Image (cartoon, rainbow over all chains, first blue to last red; front, side):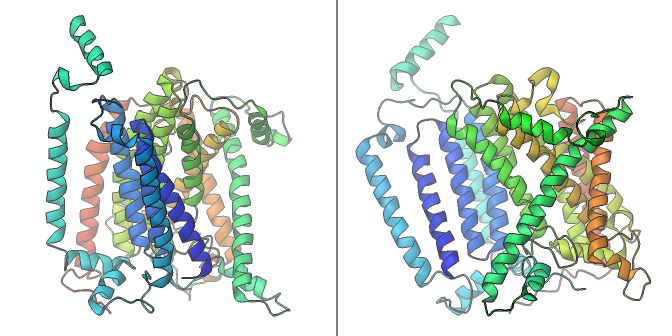
Length: 202
Length: 381
């Protein structure tokens, strides 16, 4: 990896850590969504640095474009409230100062470790790679379109349908979770007030 | 003339030209960086100057169609009207609505503007000479970069804290997603026929076989896919008759309503950049790219030297782009806006199945001609 690439890599790594941190800690769901989109776009730049153009295109168009639109539509159309439950939600826990500092520290340690890894051995290019022969074929496959599709339809032909089934199950599961009905006692005061007035109006 | 070469340097011609001036011993890397800086500057200037001319051309065309004269006061024939508008916009007060989300408001502008400019990277401006970014997956790259646009519009609509912007953002994202898929299928048709994702290879193929739009070997499926691509690209640029996201009578300016001053200027610039990019993609995929001759030519042909001259190639691209800009202006003056349900019906119910069908036919034809053998495994080195 050249010095220039290392510089870009470290810049992208810092960007990723900031966006990751913001995604976890901002208050509104929409804000978290756009920080997450920036994070996903940042990941695609990492693929570009690793000389894997095809993965860059996939990551950007599927995660940066497609999934983000779904995410934004879901965030805007669902009736989301930032403090749905009292205290025990993951958002409630993250808001604490101590948790925020520890999250930031974990990310900062990542920031220090990633460049070291990058400089020492994560080279997608083949000559200097420390990977074994079989692993090398897999990593080489990401370098050009023909090899990538070949791998996809030969070695991974079983994995792809399995993964899609897993994703479908996750989708159905999330729908089931969303349409669960809450008991009024479970909710926070603000939400209780909101639902009570709605009931009265009826 | 050669096909896509993975070792091709960006701005190859400039690099060689600069190297001819190398009297002292400096590293090739320095010359390479200089070539990239100079090339980006030249190409950027060319694109931005055309950004100022294209709206003028469009306004003139529209005015003529409506029995008016169009801009006439600023400069000769009103040529300087658009720069004057730009200066006016830049001098205006930059405002942000109360309750707007600061980061989202800025992010929407940043994402739309940056992605529009980045999309120009893999476009070749002549035979293997002026390619800013040498990608083997040129079309996929442009498509990937463009896919950031719908979320950016939605973020902008939400962050403006205005109902017009929000509804406009929703419509914009829905429309862009609905037309991206038929557009991608029509691109895949070209990829199947030419056997490459690289825009350089696709143009070279059209030198040898004639423009994709009028090729009879593909049972005129190029014409069908070209039509679908063209209409989808108009829908992607959100122009009349597909300007539903900003429908002036209903939504003021759609997701752009609350943006003022330089932000508005940037958004208008991205609108015309999108028009340019989509026109250029249509030209590269169906109208022969920088090839001025519609039928097949080879090196023995008398027209070969003319068709491969760098200046002719550059001029060809510019003329073709302006032809499509004129057509866009013509459509804007002549057609009425579609309703949102008509638009979505057209995209999902007609274009998607037809493009899929045309793609199947093309695949069948290519396999029958023996250009692709599905039983043959690719050699893995």
